[in-house]
Length: 94
Image (cartoon, rainbow, N blue to C red; front, top):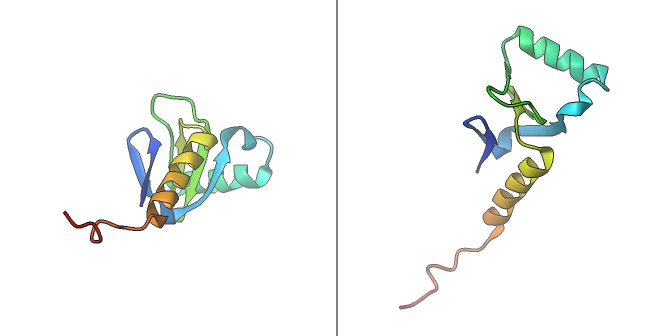
């Protein structure tokens, strides 16, 4: 399934490694170093018009998202719930 993470970016949910609150960058030297190294390799996609509220880490790229961690979590959980629903369409007789 796919998750819309803002700024016209849609990613596959299976590629998401972590979703982190943007305010945690300054409190963790490990996160700062990871983002610094990924920026050198041009593997960071910043938000265009909005302030970043969350960081979405995937297998290949780090995205800065204008959406909150809570909103992204709801979207990811919605996809998980939809995947678990059984398909009863073939059982219905009209």
